[in-house]
Length: 123
Image (cartoon, rainbow, N blue to C red; front, top):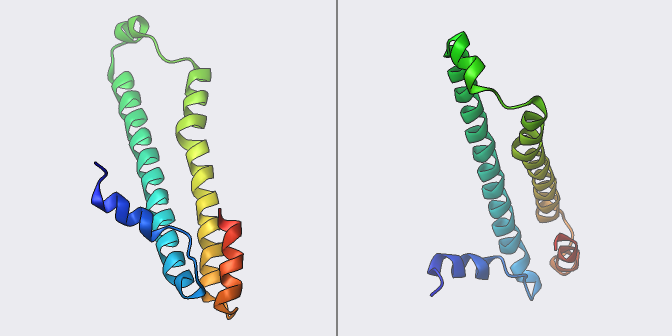
């Protein structure tokens, strides 16, 4: 069975059918996108902490242990950086842009009916 909170959130983010539903929809949309950004930033932070911890552990090793343990090649580190930092931060930047568009639409003086038609570009 589906989680009631998930069902409620899905109902809250369903596209409005009439102009009066536009502002609450935009509020829910903005809140959801801000949550996604926070999750992305937490994921990046966890990765950076893990990398820093690994680097400290490697630096603390004796020369002989360093020689025997090996280290990730630079190209592996570059791929990890792209996967765990660059792409997620790009996604966060795009989400911030979507939030700006939604806030601009919410705060505009355009009639509710026009806002409803503008919402189609958010999908």
